Length: 327
Image 1 (cartoon, one colour):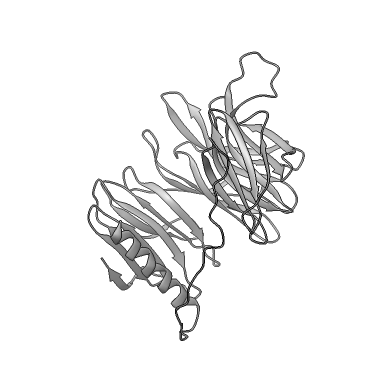
Image 2 (cartoon, rainbow, N blue to C red):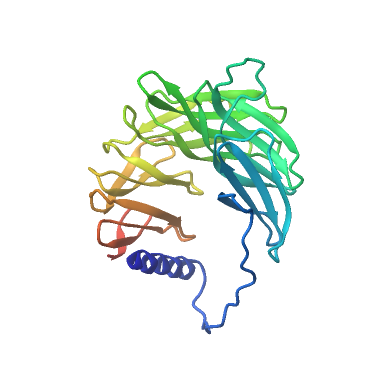
C-alpha cells in the first residue's frame, strides 16, 4: 500500500511537471469542508461529480437503486429510489444540465412478458429522480459497462452479449435520441467493451477496446459512422486484459493492460490498425497490475503500475523509447 501511494504521488508530480512550468510552491493547510454520512443502510458504489462542486451518489443494493444529490457544502439536496432498479450499476456519467446517465444490467421492466430476462439497460435521470429515458439494449444476458451521450442526444454504449459456451462477446451500441438502436456491433473475437473514444469532425468514427476473457482475445476496433469495422487489431499477448485506452490527437492509439504471461504492457497502434510497439513495463506475475496511462502535450507517455512487491512507472517517448524508469 505504501509503495502504491508513493507511486501515484510521483505520477501526479510528473504529469504536472510535463504540462506546467516549475513554480515555487508553498505548503498550506487544507481544511476539511465537510464530513458526513448519507443514506442509512445504503451502500453507495458510484460517486459522480456534477457541477459547481456538487456530487451525485448512486447506490444499488438487492435491485434497489438510489440516487442522492449532494450540494457543494455537503447537504443532501434530494434522494430518490428508482421504482424499477438495476441488478447491477456499472457506471454513471454527468451528461450536463444536471442530468445523469446510469447504466448496467437490469430486468426488462418494460416487457409485457411474465418472464422478464436481464438485459443491458441505461437510463437518463435528473435531480428530481424523474426518468427521462429508459432503454434496454442487447440480447438476454447482456450488460453495459461504459457510455457517452453525444451533442445530438444520441448515446453510445459498450458492454457484451452472451454467446454459447459462456462467452461474453464485446458489444458496442448506438441509440438515437428517441431510444431507437442506430447500430449494434458485436465482436467475433473480443471480450467485453471496456472503453471507447468518439472521434471525427465532419464524420463520426469510434475506437473501441474489447478486453480478453476465456474464449476471447483483446482487440481494438475502428468503426465508421454506420457501425461497420474499418479495422480489427487483435493483440497477440495471451490472456491480455485491457485496462485503459487513449486516442492521441494524431489518431494513434495507446493502451495499457495486464497478463500473467506477458506482464503489464503499454501498446501503441497506428491509425491504420497495425501495432507499432508492445512494451513490457511491469514483469509478469500473479499480481501484475498496470493501471495508469497519460499522454503529455509534448507527446510523451507516462505509465505506472504494480507487481507482487514493487511499484513501477515509466516515462516514454512517443516511439516507446525509455526516458525514465523507477521501481
